[in-house]
Length: 240
Picture 1 (cartoon, rainbow, N blue to C red):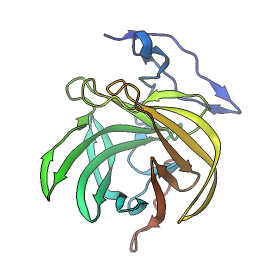
Picture 2 (cartoon, rainbow, N blue to C red; picture 1 turned 90 degrees about the vertical axis):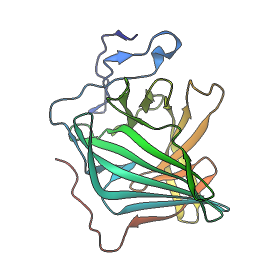
Picture 3 (cartoon, rainbow, N blue to C red; picture 1 turned 135 degrees about the horizontal axis):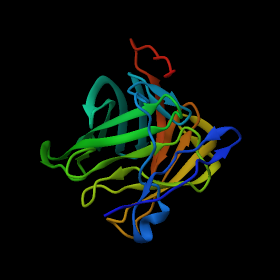
């Protein structure tokens, strides 16, 4: 069960932070778990400084034989009555397919917050799908959408990215807004760093780095080697 709490919008330098309207009980109460949204606020195309939802945009991250290719597809899907953008993540190891996931996102016209509405997961072994671990959709079996990336991040902010009890409960804390990193794709500064945990795996902690204007540049041991819009695609306008 969840309990409602009253909160006040946090305003810093004229920027409005995400407004929590509900928190999980007990030790999870310090993690934002729900967000105020206005009718018609969410759209399927746009970007904020750290997350791109524009068809054709691609990120490629590599660590040795491991490769992760993230592609914003020219495809949308209605999830929980919201039109979301589909992002495909394709993971390979030494050329062999490990996992393909189709992730569903929408961005706020008002705050530029990017919200996460779930994912469909295919896990592969020897070219054959063997499972769908971590799969969830907002509005199904009690699952609710989470916050993937704030439009105006605040140091120390803690929020759930996935809220699907028993299946996916990833959460992130913003631990830095000033990191720097050199990868094969270049040198990046003023990076946003998150520490990701989940109550489903106590003690496990992973770090991700996001670069302004680019997006994800480091995911655990994977580093960005290439990014940009695929040939034949044009950049879509930001939501108004």
